[in-house]
Image (tube, rainbow, N blue to C red; front, side):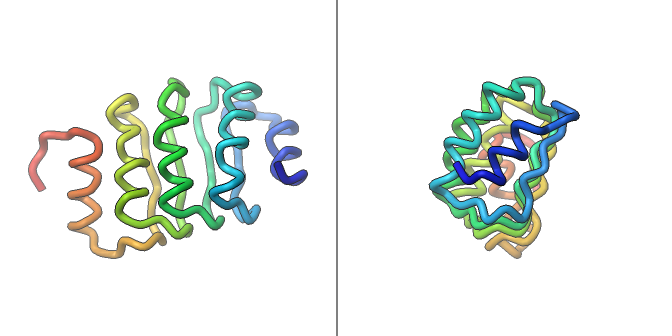
Length: 129
């Protein structure tokens, strides 16, 4: 793991909010990051991964690995390179965390109706759009 990322996780004073924005995080980094978070910050409420280099591959890891962080309330993953498959993986977290806020602006999906459909399908929501 890159030293600046490791330092941010290790030195997180709040223990509830972790800012990892603008750290040039890519798909190869994300599994190690999530594992470190689970070990050091298991009660994390907010994870900010804005403005990095994550794609659908990294989003799939997040969708799978963050499901057991039960205190997670907000995931900000804006301004990455995530498309439909990654959005589905991320929004599938809402199946386990119905009150999770996911900030997704600035990725590859620009159509609001399409994004709403993806969120509805991935989260298992029954509401109509």
